[in-house]
Image (cartoon, rainbow over all chains, first blue to last red; front, side, top):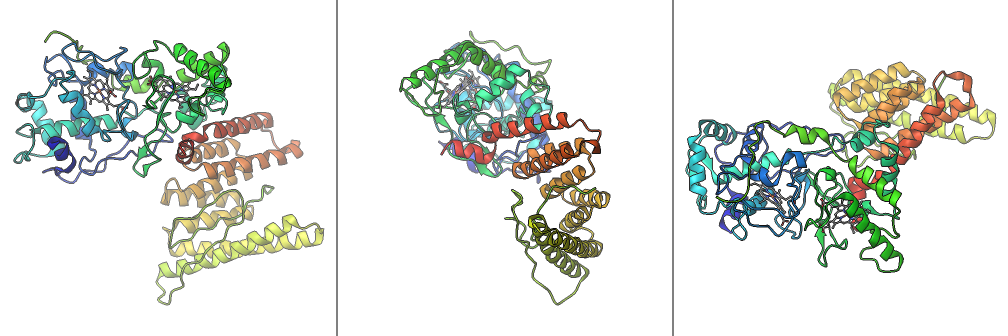
Length: 353
Length: 227
């Protein structure tokens, strides 16, 4: 794919050497990996943040990344299956965007794409079904953004003044190019780092009274071999292996947990209380329903029918399920949610067009 | 009073910095840097540092022997020897640090030998200096935590533990072990402190539990769960 290749190789163009970016990392979080051709800068992050919420990035002018990735829901959408700009239903539940900078692969079911830049082409350009519906509209998009003085200045600040567009660029106008749009949004996505939950305060800041006793009991269950959640939901993001500036801890973590014959990527459990409904197909409306599912897998395992040795090895009592839910609740990071809830966030709506 | 917690020195290798593990309280092997003929102040500092490392290594050995010795006379003799050697080490590290003010390892071991001699305030100042030269310097954070213990500054030691915990769980575990030793000593001698030992005990147990539970959060723990 030409554009993907361009994203991988195009030079950072005429931007000067970027000042070292100051990550705001919670305790216990390593610096994320950043592609060499898309170094972080505050100007780029600010620009990407605006673009992420901008309904001009859609066929209807009323949809944006944030329509399916709402800050208040930890950047998920509250639907079982996501809905595209023109009202088409997507095959999957919208993934929350939490610590995506550390993901080895992106999406529920495939081991590709592996960078945020490459992933973004899917919602932007997919036609079956349409998500943002930008295919064929790239030139109009570049021109509209270039005509907006704030954006023109923002692109120039983030990437430098325009040069001639690289071959294969879907659009270029002034300092605005398609590849730069993608890079700016990816830089913003890398700042969606959540590590300020009650759990983090308990573990990393030593605030021992911040977790209620039920959550502490749930934590003990979560990390116990019998219940086994942490066998799959391990790592800083409770999503198995991760990748940071030092490299990956292993291969992307896919597993079977009874929702599908084929392995599904282990999703993060950070902020999970905000991201209902659950699973790749949104089949469970509540965390209680998810726990009932795992309890049933445990009961089956006790009868010798285990899908994966890491899954619960015995059923879970109602108390244990409630304690596990209390623990999952403690993974909510209120500051993460409020940090990005801009008051002028566009109220984007699907359908029509 | 000196802390009753035996600590073995994990001395640093200055030229090739990595691969120095400071864990578990086991005896580690300090290594010297190559000697040089041309003597610039930095060279002299290295040479003094190497002398210090030699003394520290011998001192740690003598201290360990003293702890193990059954015969009181031998115990005493080894302990005295250890003190003497720590004193020589301290002189060498002081010299190294004055010749090259920017050598965090020299400050770290200046702190270490001071602490072994019961000079906790000097030790703390030296660790502070090491940490200002090399922020997040895990060995210095751990040693400093032990110096806080020596001064019965428990909440500072607890903070040192938390500072270490997110970056180096091995060293954090070592400091937690030292806290357990501190607690045992205080329990054996209850009048020695006004600190609520039950609170400290509870804190230590909670941290040990947290560390055990969340091992899968670390790089190694994550990799292990996906073997």
